[in-house]
Amino acid sequence: MRPITIKKSFSGLSVLALALLATAAQAAESKGPCGVQGLERCPQPFDKVLPAPKDMLTWDQATRVVGFRNTYRLYAGDVFSSHGAKPYPLAEAEHKLSDIQYTLEGKQHNLADYLANQSVTGLLVLKDGKVAYEHYAQGNTAQTLWTSRSVAKSVVSVLVGVALKEGKIKSLDDKVSTYVPELKGSEWQDVTLHQLMQHTSGVQWDENYASKDSDFSHMTQCEARPDPYDCVLQLVRSVKRKPGVKPGEVWSYNTGGAWLVGRVLENATGMTLAKYLESRIWSRYAMQQDGVWHALVPGKVDMGGHGFNATLRDWGRFGQFVLSGGQLPDGEKLLPDDWIVRSTHWTQAKGSVTAAAPNGQYGYQWWYNAPAANADSAPKRTATSDKTFWALGIFGQTIAINPAENLVVVQWSTWKNAETPSSLYDEQAVFVNAVSEALDR
Image (spheres, rainbow, N blue to C red):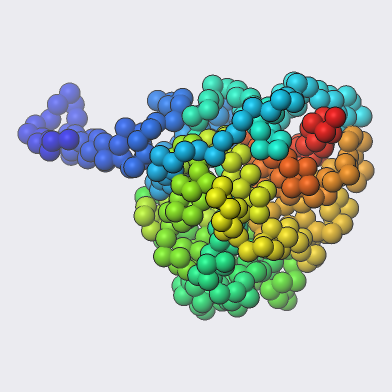
């Protein structure tokens, strides 16, 4: 775009206002036609009117649809490219999922009920690596980049495993301050990477999505500012330790700590999360479309707690990669042989063990998810349902993986509330069990 010279006021606008408009136009053009520098193929739909990112937690459901499929351009972003590689094939399954039956709270439901109850905007079922069911709603398409929310934590967990196998991270027993010197002198200083990934740091963090005063809410406000990195770093460094709680003793979900997992990985590898994902998995597995990772400092710092944006089938391909234990199509293994087992060895720190999860509910940023023990639901269990592990994000985002069944289920949703009612999680678990049974007949 050619430089614009402003000589006088026009239509009531001051010279300064016009100059600011020109600067904004130049900045927008520098990002390219898709709103992100380096993203050459625009996702579809490409909505013209976008919501304010600072209001993300309070968007209504219709707004959330637009916001979630355009999150990749609501913030600064780093592209992770497939480099035009031939995508990992996802053939159509001969045995398609046509309908299912399940019981929730004593009532019988089918597939249509599930889509409505969960406010589903995208659903993909892969059985034996083949597409058994694929569904898009609310205008989403196969070219839509949908935001992951905390599903990204599980993506980061996988990348940590890759870095460990490559020797870029020496040990999960290393203190995180070894990799992130800014943490020295803070409550995070003596926390190990193992504890950070299991969310047992003992550092206080208010994850309340319904409170304007929670640490998580403050983080979303930081992310909407022009200088998000300094704001997020100051917020995360400032939190205190729970009185009398040592690292490893108490489990407490902590997106501030998850952001630090990403910082450890970036400093250990010398790459952003996007670039490391691109170079190790995205361009080699490979995926069908470029994705975007929410960046706090483009090209330097990405948001490790959330911010992964990709197509529904590429979410599924990532699930297949994990299901394989981290194996590329040519047979090369990118993850340590025991990484998935270690990642899904649930911590039994105080707070992790519940009636629904008697062995613990959280591993290396993967979840154990099962219906509440007193839930009137079916199928509450299957022969292998305890083998299923979950990447979960607020408002219903999901990747469920059951290696024993060779099953991957991906879900995009816009729940009315971030995490409530809890019966929505029960329904997800029951649904995956019902899918498993239906596809095994």
